Length: 477
Image 1 (tube, rainbow, N blue to C red):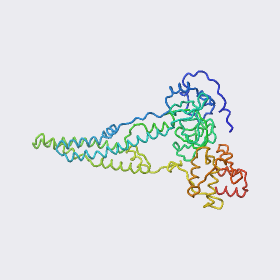
Image 2: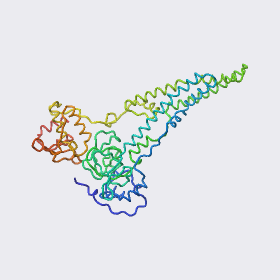
Image 3: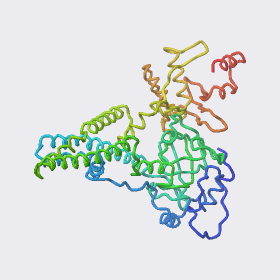
Image 4: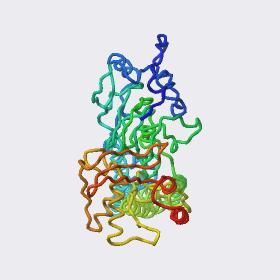
């Protein structure tokens, strides 16, 4: 494979930096050439960083991991929920009811607080566990080149400037600038929602390219599903795009929803009403000549009667049931009040495959010029497609999502395709210059040359199809 001269050339020795190079690294690495990125981070891609330099940068940049989880104890979640204004109001009403002798009513009010507090605590606890799962998705180890030698190191030990080697099956351990690719395919669905793996490239992206179109980058948390490549670490830990997502989930900034603000206003009104009723009842009792104890009892009873206990209990139950129903549909509700905002959404517009689907490729139909293929014709087409995929052959690279979809479709027809690695002569994955996969293999005593890719790319290849066949296929696709 031909490489950019800028990738393999050794950058000149820079002067001693005034500050750590990772602190100077801008976020536009996707728009720089590999040579510029390597020069800015002061690394020779052929040798990598020295062990001493990696240790020095690690002390400055910190570990390549997300912020340590701030585990909130259950008792703290209970206190946060129990100190809501309406909950405090109902608690006071229940205690006062018990003090004035209305034990049954007071206990009913206090028992009614259990679903209010419990639903909020359970939802918050589930959100914390989801955040822990997000942290667990980061790569535990990485292959790096240091001191000219490739070794496996903990992903937490990566530093800006490290040269990382990627291959099929890897989870990208940090935000990387690609410097060499050999059919590299990256599943970016964790960031973009796009279920189809995209080919990486070493050419710089436009400076204003959105995240989803930066093919010169491999971002932390995404998966390599095919091919090989090398890349330079540009950001680590919480500074990665994956880390920023985790930070938005990890923040404990609480915003009052419109309904909560209305309930807070209702609590203030009810407090004024309760105090007014106590004063009025207390004064009227004195005018009637009642004793002090009777006046206090009558005032508190009037205040309790003015506080509605049912609405907050019903609201908590309804929101809790809503969170449960959303969970059964695969939607995680971290805070109950988020459902109020979700309920106000009238229209969701999306154009990313995988956002509203299962993020899984599947063969929906197989067609020939004569129409949909069935039976033996469909099995033969799937067999040929698998033989044309480099990662379908055992002992090559990890099968990608496209190959797995072809195998599943073949298995549904009862046709397990068993390929022998010894029959494979040559194989190559798609590249920017050649957007299709090719294989040359023995089959029934003769060499078979197959290609698989976009129709417009394959129709431009030489073959036994004439102009009429080419025109018919172009009209079909």
